[in-house]
Amino acid sequence: MSAILASTVLASESTGQVSEGLGYGVTALYIVSFSLFIYGLMGLTGPKTAVRGNWIAATGMGIAIVATLLSVYNNAGDVGVPTVNWVLIAIGLAIGVALGIPPALKTKMTAMPQLVALFNGVGGGTVALIAWAEYIEYDGFTQVPHEPNVAVIVGSLFAAIIGSISFWGSLVAFAKLQELLNKNLEKKLVAAAKLFQVANVVLAIVAVAVAVVIGVKASSTNATPWYWIVILLVVAGLMGLFVVFPIGGADMPVVISLLNALTGLSAAAAGLALNNQAMIVAGMIVGASGSILTMLMAKAMNRSIPAIIFGSFGGGDAGAAGAAGGAGGTVKATSAADAAIQMAYANQVVVVPGYGLAVAQAQHTVKEMADLLEDKGVEVKYAIHPVAGRMPGHMNVLLAEADVPYDSMKEMDDINGEFTRTDVTIVIGANDVTNPAARNDPSSPIHGMPILNVDQSRSVIVLKRSMSSGYAGIDNPLFTAEQTSMLFGDAKKSVAEVIEELKAL
Image (cartoon, rainbow, N blue to C red; front, top):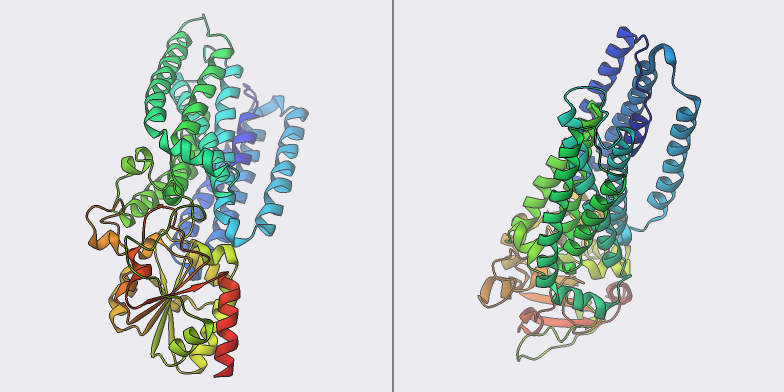
């Protein structure tokens, strides 16, 4: 989409001869690209078709870029497109390819949420820069060459605000997920949520006021100075920072989805300003799908989107928070040998993956353990919570990397009814999504959040490094439950020890 933005902005406005036939061809290519966008998005509804869906959508984007370049050429008419524009477009495409492909190929699955946040931020930043370019090109929007100029002005200003919010907010999300922020600083930021909320109200008023001034001045010959759009971008950027700063890690999956939706909406607004159909359609698809996903994620947590954005929940640190065993109760440690015996003589074992599995890169080892159990006649399934990990589908992608069959990955609603007849549930690095307090304790901050009912299993084995709490920073009574035993240590190493014990049985 960034390439479309760049090439469109570089189009020369002229009154030269325009080829009607080429114009129809561009429209046809856009229709084909839109169709591929939608068809590709349909493929992203399940892990089996996700890769194919990505390739289809990517093909559609390639066609859209070609169509945009043809449109640039055609709109220039007899005057022709200045050579410098073609050079700039080529440089932009080359830089995009050079910066986009290497991280996409080399980034580990554990870091995929960070990459998504970063790439999303790039899209928002591109839109904001396009709005800035439009402001300069049209002399503060006083020299808009075509009607209606209201669409150009409003679309550009909306894109500037939302694009800047998305860019800077996504950078903060990236920094949080990459653990670039000091933990003590992050806790202080979360604790100062109310202050950030007040600041954002003030910044929102200032942003709207600046946008109104620019819009009003555009109707006269007295354009606002160049620094007004800079002020608007800076104010919106501060809003992006202040919105995400106080949001804890537990809510990051929802925040990433929301920022993605905002980027799409800003791109659509920019497309409206530039009269570019590809940007409008692609932006609305991203905005609509991101909004739907955000609502689904919020529903999975049984929380409203305003509560997530303004609630400052989930600021705890998985490695530094207090004990997670709940008030009172006794923690029972187990060994790899005992865990292996329990699972080897079970009829059904359910694996519950969490971020701890991703950090330990234990997915391949877990798959090897499951294969050994299945060779012994044990049925193995994987229970996937919608918000497990750091982004939607994180666990599905991680397990798919280890060639875990898609049919073995069960969504929460499908697997919850099976825990009562499950002999052993092994929880690997999951905390909050297995916390029975969400179901049983009205005073718990996560009460009402749908969870995996692992506490209903006959036996539960929890793999953790220590008795630290999850991202939500609250106790988990599951760890002191009568049927629960703890296998402490690195998840990958612990599973490897279980594998050796299984081989010896």
